[in-house]
Image: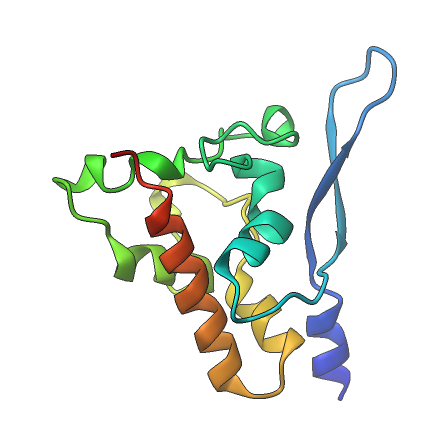
Length: 140
């Protein structure tokens, strides 16, 4: 129960708090429960603040990041025209960390998803549906 409570309090990147002439700061807030069936709802809730509504890396918190968020619409183009679904899923869950690029600002959503739902099959569904939604954002 303590672990579940701790995982449930894992913070996600939230809206920026801007003060006059101050450097933008990203606030961390508790993850909101969303429908596991809707990749779009999860994206809008968890990802758009950094990656932008269209996935181009231009969300309201992007300027406060150490490293610019990825333009998710170009993933297939940068991989020979094939969307790297397995790599995207692994990055979402935290199995792929890209340690060579330094620390990651992006939350490890696998941990958050497991905290949101007791049933592990639901966290798997969340990852699959979020990955499919990111796939749908690919530039044509």
